[in-house]
Length: 66
Image 1 (spheres, helix red, strand yellow):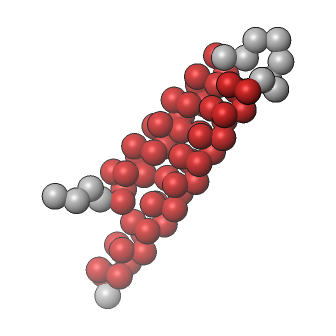
Image 2 (tube, helix red, strand yellow):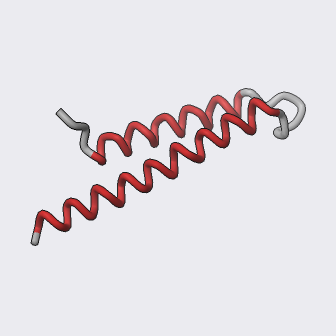
């Protein structure tokens, strides 16, 4: 059974939120340390994947209506 794009988008959004939370918690003296930058980069990629999967979901939903 394949996972739907909507469920994968929700998963990626939750992972992005989790990585953002961990990045905020890992800030010590400054935001510009390696750990925070890597976590923020991973969160950005997760949010981008979630947005892309949401657009795929909407396109599939609209194509089924026709």
